[in-house]
Length: 282
Image 1 (tube, rainbow, N blue to C red):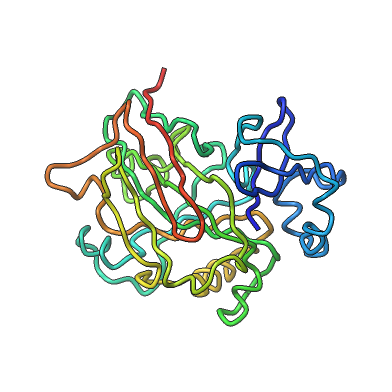
Image 2: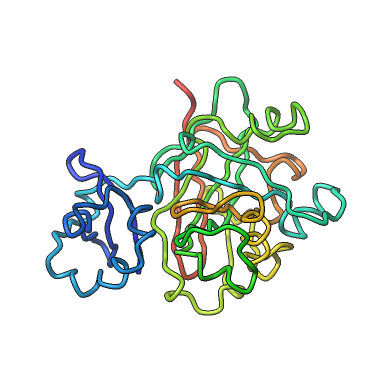
């Protein structure tokens, strides 16, 4: 299934996406306030298709997409997690994942603008796979990791590079308002065969700037779930943004940053395309 969060006439909803329309599942589950709450209840997920005929549906022209999970408890991002990216940065091999956090308030939906702030022109792209947690857990083993995964989505962890490098902590450069694009929907694991063979591709104004299979991840999804759940409880709707491949703008010669008027796309095979225009801060 493809699941999304969206607005209908200003009302926040969640639903199932098929072709060019979306079913409003919030009508079927009135006691469920949002998508992350739905993901926590496997009994509801299992009956969606059986109940679908009772759900109102809308064309994409009638809805406004939101970030897939607009209000996650946690967004945990992974740095330097493709060998091609680690090599281009000159960083040493790591025994453990490099982690940082992103605030939910920084997220934007598919089609919404990523905003370049007035304090910097160094807005960089990072196409990534987002893993959305369903079943909560702590001390999850890698063998059981996928039991806790509700689905996958495209993410653009757009970064303000000079602010990211002010100190050894990445937080400022990763948390400017309207810089974390997430969408257009999430795809449940049953829809994707052989996840490791799928690819992430980033295009700036139609030109490919990043491309890699998920088999190139240094720390794979089970390793990340196991490591992260050792120090915190993962809950439904939490997002693990798994890292970006080589080709980022800051490491190109000449450097390549996103500017107002550009369009950036992140495509993940088996999932879809996340597209966002770039605008400047007003």
